Image 1 (tube, rainbow, N blue to C red):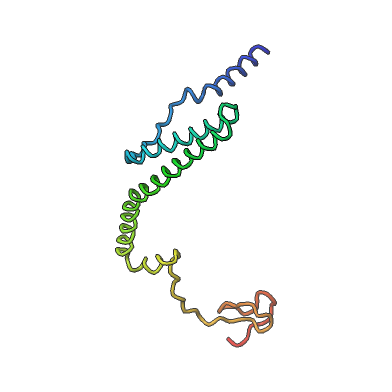
Image 2: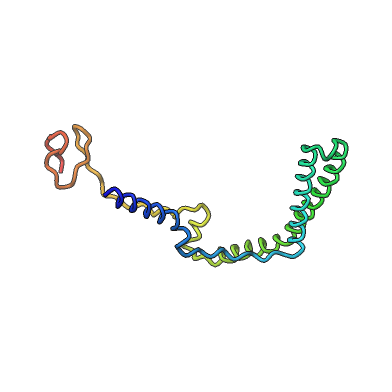
Length: 164
């Protein structure tokens, strides 16, 4: 009996562990094609960051003196800053036209919006309906509770409704 329970427990654990490997894998999302100049700048940035980390490690292990590290890391940090500036300018050149096109498309879509929806488009809320004409309300003279037109007695206090 214990053997069967242990065997079932092992099967359940094995199924839980192996389940991620047995089910079909989702496909990775398609990668976006980047401009080759931007890709090169990203790679250069990553290499400079790695060189700075390597220099820090060499300083900690004693392979570099403090003076050598200061000179080397200063030079690497300056190159990294120049690379980051180049990335920023290139991204601004490449992204700005795409954003401008999206804005122009949104403006064109807003101009083609039906008049009924234009009143609600400005604030994100639907327009308020026009107020309905309400019948004259009747209230109890004793307690002020609202009365229906066919009431003879007040539902709240029980007094006789007069004047109808």
